[in-house]
Amino acid sequence: MTDQSTHKLWQFHGGLHPEPHKELSAGRASHDIPLPKKLIIPLQQHIGASAEPVVAVGDKVFKGQPVANPDGYVSAGMHAPTSGTVTEIAEHPLPHPSGLSGLCIVIEPDGEDTWWPDLPEAISNYLEANPADIRQRVREAGIVGLGGAAFPTSVKLNPPATQPVDTLIINAAECEPYITCDDRLMRERPGEIIEGIEIIQHALGIDRVMIGVEDNKPDAIRSLKHKIEELGTSQIEVITVPTIYPTGGEKQLIQILTGKEVPSHGLPSDIGVVCHNVGTAAAVYRAVAHGEPLISRIMTVTGSGVKQPQNLKVLIGTPISHLIEQAEGYTDDAERLIMGGPMMGFAMSSDAIPVIKGTNCILVARADEIEQPGTPMPCIRCGRCTAVCPASLLPQEMYWHARARNFDRIQDFNLFDCIECGCCAAVCPSHIPLVQYYRFAKTEIWSQEQEKKKADHARQRHEFRLERIERDKREKAEKLAQKKAALARKTAAKEGSGDDSKKKAIQEALERAKAKKAQSQKKPANTENLSEAQQRQIDEAEERRKADKTEQAPTEE
Ligand code: SF4
Ligand code: SF4
View (cartoon, rainbow, N blue to C red):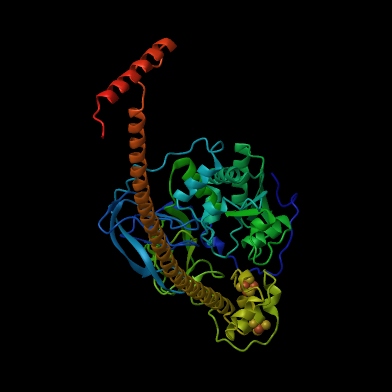
């Protein structure tokens, strides 16, 4: 084991020390809650293609039964979080900054909470299992990154062969203020986390594992270290890192622990690293060792706007209103409802929206608790945003180009390296909602790319169609020519065979005549083996016969 005192740490650029507010919920152990009246399961909860429903309205489903299958390699399936009836497959508002709606499967629980009898069997000897089987199990379980990004985990367990990875980093930093669900998970279920890490390690064939935990979670650090000692898994290091926001950013944590920087537009695998969230490791363990799909998670419901902040074991699809009830309801001065933390979360207009796999926190804040965005003022080019940017970007320049809708130019400033951490907006004296500008620019660029892809696709289809018509024409002409040629050959053959038969008949007639003639001149039978004397006798008799015949014949005279 290694800790902060023995492991060299590096620093990333910028960062902030916001008020942590973790004390509100950190002492509250996670616990189960009653079933909600309905569960709303969006088909798009992850990066990649939406899942495809495999149930219909009116179907009875069991807990853990697949209700939507992944549609493609980068996609994730959904499972019924409890037993019940599918009552609706329709559009519902999604938990997303855009506030847009999307297709959801709605399940009305029957209260029985009956597990699906066809759950996949546990892989008990998982450290000897084929890595491909582990990846398949993780895919079947619909596991995505639980740190918020929600990238399908099975894909991350299968890095390209051209980019060998040698380091696994488990992100347990939980740097965002207020959120304590990972802290609780590490304290309460360290065994699931460590065994999940071993499974991931085995699937990736990696020896070196580092768990990065911020130093404001001493109990979690102790709990993990104790479990590692107990299990004797010496390859896993728990490394305490300083509390600074956003240490939990994937690229930032990698830099702190390894000193390596993920290249611009690149991925951790480009530098031989794979990073998974600590909650994801526990979900992998449950899927592999127990056959359970991802149907629930621990999340924090906190803020001064709820009466009793909590950590709850929540079924995916539970409406936020149900979670607020478990936290004993809103306070009178509750003002803002945020999904996620105060830095990276987004405001929601309704508590009817469901939680999804990537939801780690619901924050209900009083008016004075989180600084309200003031009226935006012109940029004064103070440079504070640049000083705090952990991705070493130029937020002010990106802002100008986003504002001017200069989407080509903004990409020259590495817009897509922005992790939307909110540090720049938090320090901007002009109250410019910088992150909103970056999200807007990213969305516009993506939708322009989508439009371009669609147009390219339509053009390709049109070209294929023209090509197909031409090919059909060509093939028809070729077939016709072939038919004609065959017919001509047949006719010629027919004509040719007529001449031949005539010739043959003549030839046969000639041969018959010849044979007849030969027959008439033939010697009497059985003459072949006669002796000379016998032959002379015969000849003489013949001549006599001829002479007699001549004498008897009347003369012409
Ligand atoms: S912090 Fe705000 S005012 Fe200062 S340079 Fe950045 S955008 Fe402009
Ligand atoms: S939101 Fe983006 S630009 Fe602003 S500080 Fe964070 S990474 Fe930098």
